[in-house]
Amino acid sequence: MRGDLRRPGRAPAHALLPRREGRLSPHRLVSHRFGSHRAPTDKESAPMHDPQSGLAFYRPFMPIFLGLFFCHLGIGATLSVLPFYVKDAIGGSDVDVGTVIAAIAVAVVLTRPVAGRLSDRIGHKKLMLLGALFCVLAGAAYLVAHRVDALIAVRVLHGIGEGCAFTAGATWLVGLAPAERRGKIIGLYGVSMWSGVTLGALVGAALMQAAGFTAVWVLCIAAPLAGFACVLSKPAPVKAQAATKSALFPRSAFLPGFTLALGSMGYAALASFVSLYMAAKGIENGILAFNVFGFAYVGSRLFLGHWPDQLGPYRVALWAALGEAAGLLLLAVAPNLAVAVLGGLAMGLGLSLLYPSLALIVIRKTEAAHHGAALGMFTSFWDLGIAAGGVVAGFVAARFGYAEIYGVMLAATLASMVGVMLLWMPQRTPRRSLPQ
Image (cartoon, rainbow, N blue to C red):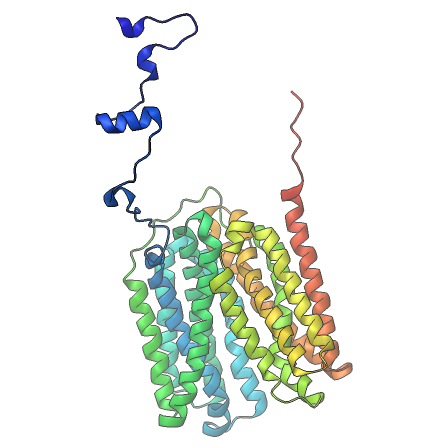
């Protein structure tokens, strides 16, 4: 009864006691009420395990990362070997070399939008397994492709496999990753692809010199087979239910994709002409600028890949395009190798974050059940930008010169910045409430 007696305006005595789920010891009660502090015991101060941090967070994604890595390990092995195989083994011309190398890129561009929509329909795991299987079959077909036309057909099959595996894996990861960590995961997915291509090229060249072409084709069978096994070990995700019918060319992917294409054109110019550009100036080892670009590209994904999540994809995409523009400007005016290397460094740091930032924008603008179609379409713009960049760079070099290439690509990157700002403007414009 006394606990309920109170003066007007004062809480009852029992309301002043601390709320608790269980009984408090006398010492803890005094500590709570009078603010005394004691050092916690080792058991109390031990940090709780956070599944969102450390290697434990990335463990569920590893089968998908490794599946993509192994598929691209075989693809990378062909890049360093096929020019020699076409010319030395089957007697092809330089034009044949270019056609064979380009066939896979054309197949990938055409496959990605279809693969994205198919991934939404049949499931991401099924399509990624199918893509890995296509890569295995392509590896086996290299063993019997002794004519240029047959080799082109094999490359198309390999491109279909790559397009299916990459698109399905990317969409699968987006569904698995927490919304606040998606940008980081998308960036690491790209690292697994680039690592596979780079290492595959080195291993393929070494195998060709040590054991001949057959050993390389065996690697092209074994590597995607290992990727198939990695993907098979991962349980299939729950299929999202679509509220609307999926479009083959989702509108949410067009402006981000076009922005990405404008940015990727500079990469094609750097990869294709930086060595010739430096050589024309009498500078040796011009390829070092491209090598530094590669290290910066991977390093940026590894150490700065969380920026789109934490700082916002629009802001980071604008910074990324600005960084690439600065690199292209340095290349356009480079008087020596050091400035060209700085240009490659700036390009790598910038372009590396442009893709995951814009991909995050696409994901946020697209219904979850249609992520596959949207990401497939969006990624196709990357390939289209590289193809267009190579063609434009070749035309500019023939008509005006090498330095002018990087001026034109600088203009394309500035246009990419405009695209980012057009995407960002609706987000920054305050919404006015309607009158009541």
